[in-house]
Length: 324
Length: 135
Image 1 (cartoon, each protein chain N blue to C red):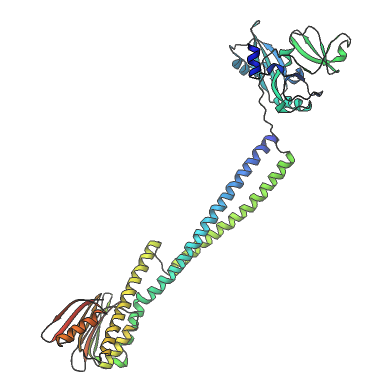
Image 2: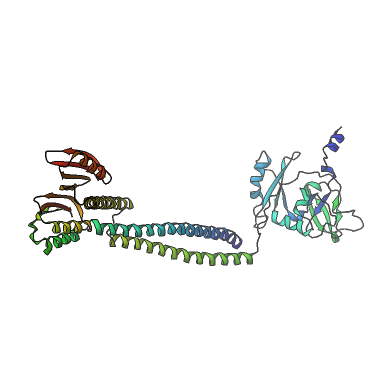
């Protein structure tokens, strides 16, 4: 039933090859995906009893355990608890070195599914195993090591290929590695120089713009001083509007005066003007008394020039009041 | 250490460059606005100056009125002048037709701010006039 389900869901976990990676010998087999076992040369290993109840706490304590044993560098740590001895298997490794080894083995990062330590995979070795013709995996006192094959009798030790179709025994390790250098140092320096050039150029431009801005402000002040302008544009607009209104009224008054003069001239001074008075927007005209018909004609004609507000006939005058 | 410095330096410089570009861009925009506002101010200043010269120029107005009043053409007009705050009051006691024509024509073609003008016939061939001009 389980097999059936595994087939349905295409669970190929067990089908992936498990390849031993060291970086000093290539992996010839080209698999699309694989699990890898890290050579002991790619990590440091220690067994220790720690005051930790779980793996996370043990990982936090691991740097102290390795302090002084491993060279300075950037390490990532892993811990697995051995339930039989209550001890922790502690690992320190450099992700950068591991991925360098993977690269040297001719593999790509995306080809790798899970990573295991040789310690967990070969911890129970009863005899050395030759790998790649130059090295042998050997276990002594529970510690797995990769040694030159010359140290052993070649005829006695069995050979294994780097990639085998076997199931891993230990737990996989998760390695966080970000490829840091996208660009080389040379490129970096070139980029920095380029940045500095642009920064200098734009800095100069900014300085010029600032000067230009200051120049415009100065010019604005000069204009205000020259024409004795008020401080704000709102006040200036108000003053302009007031003066425009004055101009409009004055010109209109002149136009009306001129029109009345023309009107009198046109009628050959038939209508005798007694009084002409303009004050602000009001106009008063007094004529010698005329016949009613003529008075009406006069009013009609004048209404074309001014807005007549009243017309009254007194004893000897016709008084017409109007608005300009 | 060198690696770290380089890896930090490039983004810092890039940030600095971006800030500089942003600053230039905003300055450029501000300058455009400033130029436009300066142009408007110049136009308005000229407009204001011209209007002020025409309608709010007390010295020029007074000088003009004095020249009209002192004109030989109006010698016989029996003129009285009086200053009242910012108003110039002129009384013409006797104007003949020619003098009236001259006075009205001169006033109509001037930029005096006439507050009031009152002309009244006082005889068959003469009239009197009162003129108030704002200075």
